[in-house]
Image (cartoon, rainbow, N blue to C red):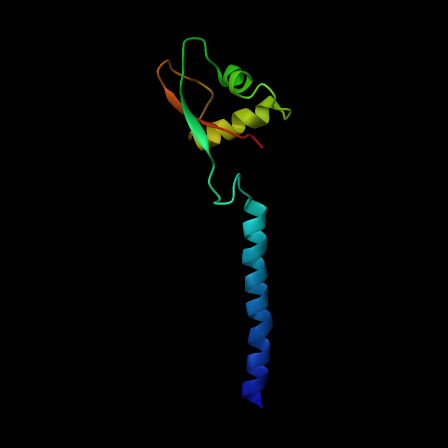
Amino acid sequence: MKRKRRQLRIIPLLVTIGLFFSVSAIALGSNNINGTIEYQIITVEKNDTLWSLVEKHHPDYNGKKQKAIYQIRKINHLDNAMLHVGQELKMPLELK
């Protein structure tokens, strides 16, 4: 009898754990089926800024430019928006 009760308590725990991982996977989202971000490598040229690069590579992006800049900084592990001529950046093919 005790064994059956113990088994009945484990089932909700397993369901809860399964739901947690499912919701976490959905919440994280991704840009494609494999969960990877597709990007191109660009080289910073004279007078380039993150703002100008977003305008150049994503002219139809309807989101806020600040959000796009944040995404690019995050992907490239940039502490600030300062760029250097010749620096290579990963530019996402799609911005969210």
